[in-house]
Length: 100
Image 1 (cartoon, rainbow, N blue to C red):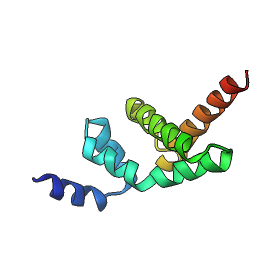
Image 2 (cartoon, rainbow, N blue to C red):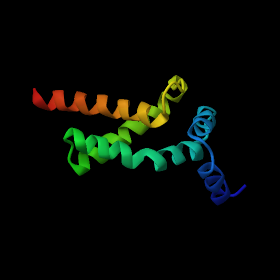
Image 3 (tube, rainbow, N blue to C red):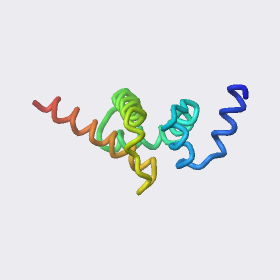
Image 4 (cartoon, rainbow, N blue to C red):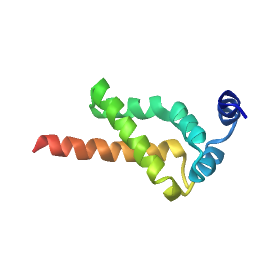
């Protein structure tokens, strides 16, 4: 399967299927999750007070943390909500650090 075929196949899958593939090392599957939910995560961070560049940086950090912790996602809520919680925690941690 070519990379383009893999991306097309990933685009038609449900988030839970993509998470299951990402758990087994599916980078293309995780990339699809980032593509689907990246703008929502960045928008949340901007609503919390981050400027555009900081929102981009923290969103990237949140997705990196999500990739590293993907086995901890239990599917009790949506993937988007889970990664948004990670991003919000990172923002609050950064805000507290900067406030000192």
